[in-house]
Length: 510
Image (cartoon, rainbow, N blue to C red; front, side, top):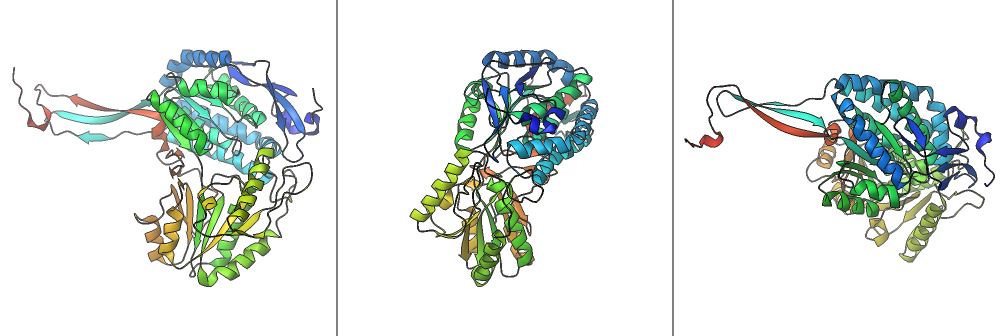
């Protein structure tokens, strides 16, 4: 076994992790196969620990154990399920510092963002607990005398959750907390490159559920996408699969699940834009754009990729933005003074360098950045680029801190270009003119799922439904009425009369 840095980080043991942790939990037990994967720190590419992966046999064991517990969990009153989720939130509060540190270590985002990700899970536990007492269906009038209609919502059953490396804890929390209060059971396959976060998070959920008499309601099957992921997407016993990742893989997941008439929640690529008009608070816009573009080293699905500036404020704004980039401290994500950590892995660095080369080939001008930072880690310079609005590369999402800046004449041109990409996740308009704002959120405005005003493109709150349109996948998670995706709806008509009239006035006497 290669030299490990496990003992260097006391918070790992606090989270119940070991130098070689097991990657499958179900039926109250931790287990695994023999294949291992390394947990690698993006800071210096050293190995922190290893995780033993689950196999196809473990997947089947998870499903069977969950099926055995399904009826008991579904029949537990929703407020009682909500109380258990509240307890999960309390346990996560106790482990917030340790779990936030692990996210920074293994994913590479700075400690403040790691803590913020854990806070999202705490918040969604609180939200879901309240939701458990307000899951509702409509009572509808019937056209037939002595009849009434109502909507009844029931759990789907086992929900598969496949998460990505960039939010290795929060996205499972969004799905699990809402799904659990809805009466579903959650089967999780985390990212193969953040196994420790998956195991540590699953331990917290599993321990609380076990204390309440449930051993398989949340099960972890930390295996490869080729094995566990394909089993899950093809499995008719999993009526809903929530997938977060690239549009390319999401298209495969969507097609596979739809072939068996299953449901999906797809959270895929983003190519997010901010529009800044000349009536805006430019200083506020500058701060918002800097965080949205460089936060998480450009690896949020909501990271800012494009800025459209009215031509009379373009030069001054871009000059200030370039200057602000020079003040951003890049370094160890566990250092509290760091603002930008590394890219997650070497593949991310390669994506960055290939994009820089392609930008140059397409006539782009690099205003700042554009280089890989020498050393053992996956560090790159946040980059600002001037390029033609219609360049091919602008149509693609590069999962790295590369930001394109453009001139536009007015809000109508800006909206056109905001919408003129295949993705449709997040967007924002900076303006102080109500006419512009209501155009922006209206039918001829932004075509994204997140349509902001006077804030950046990233940093969504859990109270709203999160997701996007077009190649972003159309899924919605977290708040508002996203819970409806985790349940099945029945329209129930009851006749409390002594006659049998038919709808639409049809007469059929026999």
